[in-house]
Image (cartoon, rainbow, N blue to C red; front, side):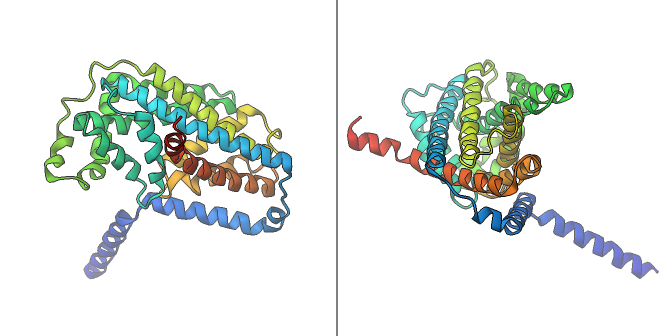
Length: 321
């Protein structure tokens, strides 16, 4: 009996040990890919019957334009955020740095756009300020997207919950969040640089204590979410389903899916996760074939805009604009 209990305890310890080694984000992404794959398989006939006419192509072109502009707007929001934490970026082209490194998020690991930005910023700013500017940017994105989530309904507690997320950008709360994020994301910075940088996460003296609330960066980031949503709406309109639900419900579902795609995925750009959340939240409102086609086109539109943004500055230099 005693041996049986020992065996059972060893099995429990083994199972818990295996679970602790599982990459939760990777597991969720695999589940989402399986969900998307099964949806495509079950609706393959309807999906293959979808056609895009000239008007639909114009809508997709509009989606590319809105998505491309959203990247530029996002870069400008980051520039304002860097100024907000007390950094003088006059010697750096922050918008160019953001746009040119944005494509690195597609590299395995999904961290190389952060690493590349940090590698450049640390030449001009302190290590602390460089890390802070990088870690605050996704936080600003999440706050901006949460503002639109309550638009899908009239439940007051959803409004309170989502809009109270703006409080996290208050200097005092922001200081606490940055310290926690530094501890969580330490490997991004310490595993890629010299040993003398490994102690930079322990020194919190340079965290912005005198910075003010980032009204301007948040406002610009809200515009970024709107432009991102307009790109998505264009893809829905390309298959004539954009008017089947209210704009409030659409932007609410989009913002929530985009937020989950930013936080959860192991794949870049929320690939698989974003689409799964949209299918789960809006699948009952749309015919699944056109919705799947819209999601696939939106993923293509987003990728094209990311690639297109990279060539903006080389083309400007070539044309001497």
